[in-house]
Each structure stands twice: as structure tokens, then as C-alpha cells.
Amino acid sequence: MKICCIGAGYVGGPTMAVIAQKAPDIMVTVVDMNAARIAAWGSDVLPIYEPGLDALVRECRGRNLFFSTDVAGAINAADIIFVAVNTPTKMYGVGAGRAADLRYIESVARTIAEVATSPKIIVEKSTIPVKTAETIQTILAGNTRGLKFQVLSNPEFLAEGTAVADLFNPDRVLIGGERTPEGEQAIERLASVYARWVPPDRILKTNLWSSELSKLVANAFLAQRISSINSISALCEATGADVDEVANAIGKDSRIGAKFLKASVGFGGSCFQKDILNLVYLCQHFGLPEVGAYWEGVVKMNDWQKQRFAGRIVRSLFNTVADKRIAVLGFAFKKDTNDTRESAAISVCRDLLAEQANVVVYDPKVPAAEIVRDVLGAGISNPRLTVVSSAYEAALGAHALAVVTEWDEFKTLDYARIYEGMMKPAFLFDGRNITDLAKLRALGFRAHGIGK
Image (cartoon, rainbow, N blue to C red):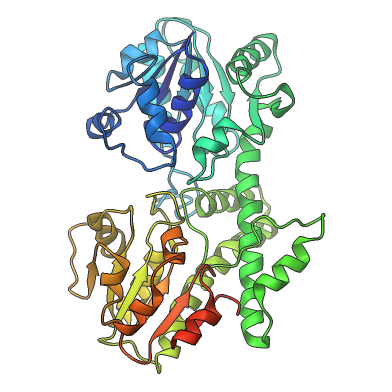
């Protein structure tokens, strides 16, 4: 068997590396039109950071894992083609700000229809709206060679920072296909790949539309839990309750559970906001405005939480941060990744810059150029925004520290040293509740957490 994956990003790279490691008899080729990205996958510095990924790629690369820009060649050689291209939120025309932009999905389908010389199994790995398979099938059916293709939905449920571990030991693998003899055969063939290491009871087989919709709904439910506990964090601050204690109490209820009840400055990443907005658009498209409004409220609550965090900094610093140095610790949307998409840090930095603060950012994995571009935009500079190479450098002379990403190193910093080098009174705002506020206050900090 030969597998081709179109798209060498956060989904395609790790997924194909694990398949290559678990199935050494399968030749896996990852292709992308971005030559620089492909070159990075073949270098000592991978284009994405994910714990355990570097060793995995080194083990398999050149053996049965290959990276190439020869898209047509890989398509023709493959039996199974995974489609893992980007599906960002559409920012123009009908559905702007909500609907998924499927231009890359359509482009891939047209390329397969154009160059394929034999039947293929096409696997949707990208996060897409329900019924996208119909579009792919229609385009593929237009090929002039009379070839028959099977389209499957196999959504990823990876959490960045634990993607390799998630792939090695998934909660479930979901495969959706047409309920026809040919469709069932295609489902079984893909299932046989995962069966090399995934127990049979964790491989779920559904129809196409259930599989496509399940990905959006899973992310919506997870994001809803975060927004729910974040809404309660504001009430905790107003009443003197502790949000961690409240979350622990309700999390003991087996009907609720403890996962995703961690209050924070807000969720980010490539999935939650994009998928909820896509779900909102689908609800509106199918004449369900009340359902769409409900889920849109989850995104609005998340945006409000980010604004509330920045607003609390301003209020605490005597209602002005103009010309004050604010150290922002962390820029990735979560620890153990260099992904900054929809990161809460972007919103926090912009709000502080709008208040004319001098913002100094440190993140252990995100490049300085990317931080500046995310906050200000491509080709734009602002002397009030600087990026430094350590937390201590960021904190030196700062009026306040804002912990925005829960990197482990921020738990063990020498806060006594940091305090000595800061302006007084020295403020600390923990947007992830990872520090010991009592100890920080004993050092002299005016320390604030989320929901505390």
C-alpha cells in the first residue's frame, strides 16, 4: 500500500509520521506546493514544534516517510490520498467571518481529477463543513477517464502539544463513508491501516455526514465548556469564590467531569473558533438561527474573556498603562506548540498597545518575526512592541507581568529575582492560574489570577 498526504501542516505531518512508524511496510509521502515547508520537513528544524515529533520523523524519514513537492507524482503512485490542507474561515463574500473557505479543498479535488490515472480512496482529513464530500465527489466525477473514486471522512481529533501521544493512543478513530458495497470496502481498507495499533473497538465507522459533522460538534462542545467556566470566573472574582475550587467541585460530578474546566484568559488555536463559526453558519444556512445564536455566544464569551483580562490590567495599574512596560509571558495559544493562531496573546497585546503601553513579549518557541506580524500585521512596526529572548529580560523594569501561555518554565521562574528588577508596586496577572499567588504576594507582588 502507498499513501499520499496533500498538506504538510499541523495535521498532515504528525499523522503521516505516526502511520509511517506504525506501518513500516506502507510507503508514506507528504506533498505540499510550499517548497520551503517541504525543505523544513527534510531538515534538522521541523516547521512545527510538537513534543516527540522530531525523533519520530528522524526515525522514519528516508525509510518509508518522504516529503516532496511532486504532487502529481505522489497522487498517481498512491492507493489512498489524505487531504489535509488548510480550511480557514472565509473573510469575504457570502458567509464572511463564519463559513469555511474551501478553495484549497476544491483545488486539491480538481488536481486529483486532472492527474489521477487509476481509482483512488480520497480521505478528508481537513476540518470541513458537513456535505463537503458531495463537492469533492462531484468534481472527481468530472474526470475524463471514467475513474471511480471513493471519498471518506476521517477527521483528526488532535490536541496541539500532545498530538503524537494522541495519535499513538487515540480515544477513537472515526471513519465515515458511503453505505454502498464500494464505500464499505473503502472504509475497511482505511480501517486496516489504523488497526496496526488502534484497538478495533476504538475505530468507529459511520456514514459520511455523521463523520463530517462530528468533528465540528466535538470542538464546539469542548470550546463551550471553556467559555462556560470562564463566564463563572468573572462571577468568582466579583463574589470572592475561587474558580479552581468551583471547577473541582462540579468536576467531581460524573455527568460533567473535570476536563476542559480550567479557567483562563481564553481559548485559541486553529480549531475551536473556526469550527464554531462554521457551525453557526451551517445553522443559519439550514434555517436554524436560534441554534446558531447559541453557539455564537460561545465565541463572544471567549472574546470578552480576553478583553476582560487586558481591562483588568489597565484598571489595576491605576486606570492607565500609557508608557508603562508590560511583560507578556507566552505567545503560543497553549504550551508545547509554536502555533499562534487565534492566540489570546494577540488580543491582549493589541488591547495594551491601544492603551499606549510598552509591550515586551517572550515565548520560548514562537519566532520574534511571527509575534510582530500576528500583533501588528505584515510589514508593520511599532516601537512600543518588542520581543526578547528570556522571561527575565522581559520583566526587567516592567510595571506588570502577564502570564498568557502556560509554559512549564513559567512555573519555576525565580520570581524573587524578577520582583527585584521590576518597578514598584509590581503587578502580576496570571492568565492561566499556574503560579502560587500566595507566595507571589509574600514576595511583594500584587498578584491576580483568573477567577480568584
